[in-house]
Amino acid sequence: MTETALQFSEDQAEAYDRIAEAMRSMGIDLLQSSLTPATEGKTRVLAVLGKAGSGKTMLLSHLVKDMQAAGVEVVSGDYESKKRRDKRSLAVLAPTNKAAFVLRMRGVPATTIHRILYTPVYDPEYERIAEWLTGQGEKPEIEGLTEQALDRAWAFFQAQKSVPGALAAAGLRGSDFITGWKRRDEPLDVGFIDESSMLDERQFDDLKEIFPTLVLFGDPAQLAPVNAPGGMVFESLPAPARLSLQRVHRQDADSPILDLAHALADPALTFEQFETMVQHTARRDSRVVWAERVEVDLMARSPVLVWRNATRIRLIQAFRHVHGAPEDALLPGEPLICDGIELPLKHRKKRIDLEARGLIKGAQVVYLGPGRKPGFSRLHVIGAEDPQVSAASIVKIEKPDEEEPFIPFAANMGAAFLHGAAVTIHKAQGSQWENVQVFAPDLYAAARMGRSEAGQPLWKRLAYVAITRASERLFWVVRNRLSKPSGALPVDDLRAPPAPLTLEGEE
Image (spheres, rainbow, N blue to C red):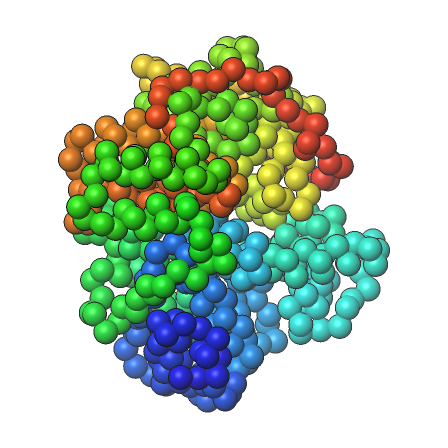
């Protein structure tokens, strides 16, 4: 067992040592913090598997720090230095922007699988800032940027390890520092893949072409990808390559939410028994609530989690109805979920403008009102450094029994949004909220259907993913009812100086 691994429990230490052994075989010695030339050989794949609270992210974070201490360069996909092309490399990846963002918020320099295939080319002047942020140069003097702006960039990078985000925090737009894009033409050394339960076979094959060594971090209790009938990619690995974390390490290990999540592993547990367990837990712990109705006030900041798309649409319409939202417009304060940036390749610079400010697929957004130009919306991006942006918007709000969604703002291209008052559990993977409402009638419907996924009842996988999205409080909603709002949709809590950002569509 290594010195680093002594901080861990027995299962974490075993996983660390197995990974360290794999690294050492390819010339990366984590114990001695040293490097030797890479060795040729077939692709090595290991998987670290554990349920919520088992310490996967903590182990990943420690491994990243020890790899850096050994001299391995962490490649983020946002920026790669020309000065260190001969260095050994590590990329920390996630299948979605949202999952990568969650890791960056924890100080891990993560990016998406797609972004590692296409990397930006930086303007030489602003590349000096990137080199300084990544520890490869001195603090530069840039005309037009104050010391305070550079300090904001530094503070942002320390928190989220994103070079474009840091430059955006300094007041720059992506079009200022990104001159173009190139496809990766050289392989990297090591890839750490978080949320690997969401990987499909095609993504897995692409990764094996880039990385001779892969370490997958995943939760076998989550939902498998929709387009992966064969299950999760790590299930096909030989048993010695699957490293299991059994113990719960999370500081709030006494959380009743985690207790409920782990109770779902009992194969004999029925839906009715689980609901009884939720009810008993709610009586003794305020962090779990047995809810007779959906709390509409909570929907403005965290969506209700549902299984069926029809349920999602009905709840969204009910939310809009109780707030008196008009048929042809959005109200300030309505929640939205970013569904991607719809821009052609020639507008990649504008895409990075938005992504650098946190407007990524899956981002939670609050509508503030129409923009100055037709088709534009003023938006508040929850959790972003410069949260208030103006973007050409395509806002899609579905209605029951109607194929075409209602679109109050429809630019030719720009940022696309779905309403955020309710979201499917599949879409919620990789996200987390303080308060989460789970619509239990949908899970009961899944239980009645008797469907299974990867050898486990579907309702259990849905319930597991849904309740583990809550970091503080879980509301188990048992009735198809909606509370009355306590007042108008709030926006006062979102006030912030507007960021100097616009996204315009061009033909």
